Length: 159
Image (cartoon, rainbow, N blue to C red):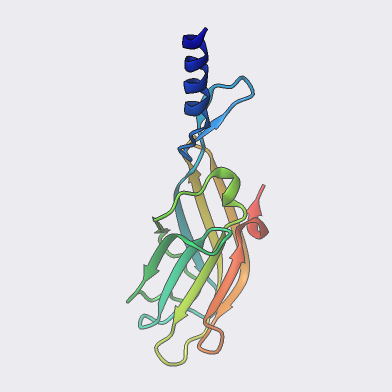
């Protein structure tokens, strides 16, 4: 009886330990949580491009404002009516699939003098289970007077 009680207590103690990367299914089995694997941003410049000497930083923030991924573009001219190559964001924090839509995307333009940039933006997010989510915003603008913009991902979710 004592052995059974000790084994039961050990099993309960082990099951209460959380590693953060697993979830429990309705059957009680442990499963790996689906997380954000990669994210990329593509800019579609409208009639007013970004100057080569102006830098753009793209930061993915979790719902508490902590940096989860980041990418920067420096010394690249975004000509009028062009599409940029996808900018891959370097991941620095794990986001679960449930946290992705609540995340925010912060854009920061560091202009070299006067620079007005109007654009549309697409974000592609790939999850660890192989699924993808896309987000899109139209008619965005950054300039020396308003160099920063923060968007909640759910506001641009493409069904």
